[in-house]
Amino acid sequence: MNWILRTMDKMRPTFSKGGKLGWLHSTYDAFESFAAVPSTTTSGRVHIKDAVDIKRVMIIVVVALIPAFCFGMWNTGDQHSLAFGLGWSFWMKVWYGFYRILPLILVSYIVGLGIEFIVAQVRGHEVNEGYLVTGFLIPLIMPVDVPLWVLALAVAFAVIFGKEIFGGTGMNIWNPALLARAFVFFAYPSTITGDTVWIGGLGKGVTSYAGTAHNVIDGFSGATPLAQVADGATAPDFLQMFIGNIPGSVGETSTIAILLGAILLVWTGVASWKIMVSCVAGALAVGFLANGLAEPGTFAAYPAVNHLVMGGFAFGAVFMATDPVSSAQTETGKWIYGFLIGAMCVILRLFNPGYREGMMLAILLMNTMAPLIDWCVVRKNIRRREKRAVAAK
Image (tube, rainbow, N blue to C red; front, side):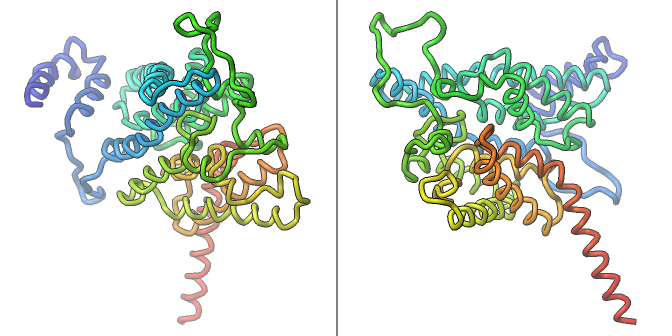
């Protein structure tokens, strides 16, 4: 590592203000801070000094996403192998998944970071590490078959209108990764709805591998379990959905892998366990109420517990709802915020036939309401203290 630091030190005068490439100072600073811990520290009494910075927090979240990413690679290959009757081995499935997911990750980072670097240069600001997580999240919540040009447009929309227009990292109202998915859903619905998008096709003009044609297995459906249940079909059992070998977005299918990430986030204090628990409580409350009132055989009668392992609920509750910027900040507000997300998700699933998933819209809606929730909590606390002060006189 020392040679990297020495090289960066030699290059610093060139990229400093007044140097030959001084106008690229923000770009140089971004690479320097990524390669090593910045040598600058805060000063003055008003600053809170801590060993944890944004880069460390972002890296922890990326590490927490790795189990979901690794399982998503295998599951992408597994679903493709099942759909086309290929009988692939474990490593063939992993390799195919890596081959299909890598372009999504590259497009996400190239487009997103490219925009952030340009904006930083224009504004003369430092490049923040916030997109390190967003760039990884976006491919994980997309179908593997999403066209790369659509993904590029979605990333550009999310970064420009979800972050930079509000001032950059830490200023955004909504979760940028979910904005990218919402853009794809509403602007190009055919690329994120339907059966075949979840399993990865052979590609245009390709009908076989190694000269051998493969037929789709009889009875196989590329529809997600949530779509199957909503259409009145039989979905996989709870254990299969909990493990995650089902069609779905790249990183959203395995609840086990997501829980491993949740343990790391809670243990390190990066994410709020209160939001995660209250999301589950809200979903179960509405789900059990629907179970009690529904007629047998209807979607509302589907076991409430199964909603926790279907669609993007688990992934959203752990990695999206807990976004420290767009979520509620007060401790009481976190309980309210999470509960309403879980409840709204199940309500949307039960009563909105045009969009059965629900989690994406529920989180975006509560992102919008989070400041109001915090304001109400703070005002209630102020009134309680005022009454206490008057009674003490």
